[in-house]
Length: 314
Length: 308
Picture: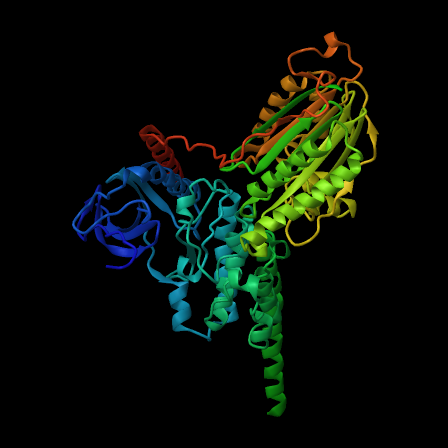
């Protein structure tokens, strides 16, 4: 037995309302995500609210056991789940995962989302470590930021942006997934259910000053995700950086390999002081795309001049 | 001395109330204190409690029944309160980033003269005839930016840094404390001490108007309700000590059960009002089956709307 009791997933083949469970896709401290098929055999992702600290599903059971003393907190934790559902239901954006249904069953609640084919940015980074092109980074993140802008417009923060939560569709269009940590800038209400943040991607204020969360918090994570694309490594976790900052600026580590403007922008997002970061996605997007043309021009001029030089040599 | 006084602290939409307040008077002197424990720091409410408790204890020790020097009392009281908060964190080996901190504003009235001092962004207002006669200047980043002309007061309202203060009790740096001038109170003047949960959503003018010629105990609760309404779902803790000076009022003018008349008090007696310390958490309302069903219905309706 693992030291902390983990919840058992629903068994393959289990019929959950109109959906047939295929297998577990992922599990976090707060929920389990399944691949399932609807009546038309369309694949969907179903997220089940099941916080490990409050409810336990043991082998061979469908209904989780919720100790009496946790019943009230368990129910209040649903609010976070509702927030996620509510926020996603109001969002309709090609770069944000789409919610298809929401229902109550097995003493808990479920959210059905569109299942995306493709792979996560995390997997992509793994495969192409150290050889990801600037144009790819700019393209993926400019599109992703469109989605994130929509999220922030709805007064929602994602709070767990990382390559593993960025899905690359087959057409290359990114989708922002897993709003499990998302909060509508509300509540510290349910303290037992503090989401676990991902070291390296979580901004310092997520550890130290939860009342100072804002768009800039997601921007830190976007910066860290772009940073991860450069060399396949995660920046030093913010909590350690606060103690002893050994973070090597992107502008220093990858000078020459990527444009200085891109590297500076990444470092800008990763400032420990949120006031120093881009304060809105729009501001960041502007910087990412503004310079894009210049970079294109540069390469165009470079290649032209190279060709000219080639001509001269001939 | 004769005055009416009213104090109230509300949790707002936060889980904890990190604000603390108190007032305390002897025959000849009145002390009012508001402290707002720092939300970003653990133990914020402990810091606020230490500050308020410390000030009232020193007051009770020294105001017998007069304070020898009100400014000296404020200076020493706040400096020692700062040390007491620091001692608390050193005693618990709390790292700097987690050390408890609090804002603090304190006011003494003696011989119809008000003396006040503050660190941070909890405020004091002197209101006279529906206008702001005097107020403290926040030790906040946005106030500094306004002073430097980098920000207009309107832009400060929703500024991301609006909660950042550069002076407070506790923490490693010695607090920057500002002292008032000696301000002679006139009959009918109102002195308001409040945390930013109260002043931030409200307009100064509204504050001044709503306390004009209305008994503090009737004026303050609707004012707090208005602040809560304006602040919406993120409403901060709200705390006010409101006092109307009535030295020259006839009994009938000021009247009412909330009027304090200190003439008859013994030389060494004190009256203190300070809420008890404890985890003041707003109880979680029960999430009923109906609440769950209606949340789900709402989400499903939004999904249907968006899929068309």
